[in-house]
Length: 201
Picture (cartoon, rainbow, N blue to C red):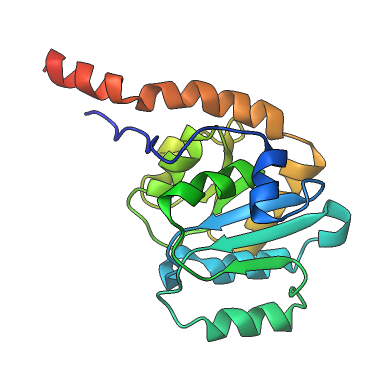
């Protein structure tokens, strides 16, 4: 058994301030990142409902949704309107070129994957490359990558638990501690580790 290595070809780690400039966003706000092709199984609806439980103004929180919609966007747009989230959700409804991926991950404070079903996730492997704190749901192998309450959160796939994890992260200011843990965890997912395992075999 050898885990899949990180996707480490999307650019370098840089400051949130520099990344925010490239996306024309304020570095004074807190950002959640939902990244990649939007399909129903990825649980964006759960995340939007979770936001409705939070005091987004107090948390200075914004959600960035970056990726093409492969599901009908209408239900999500209606949900945003229903919960009055228009000022708190930033939609980038298009394919993100490889040379721009780093901008989004370096901007993010917390990468969120509220998936309803999963096996593994390339998004988590990109997030680890950028030393990002992550929140994942306990489906497939996602919980094997992110140790709960060390480099992020592993929660059940319900909006209230998702909201609780997001609030805990920002209220208790866990970003630095989680990112330090992510930097350690990602060592086990290096390409050199995979090649050494193959040589040992």
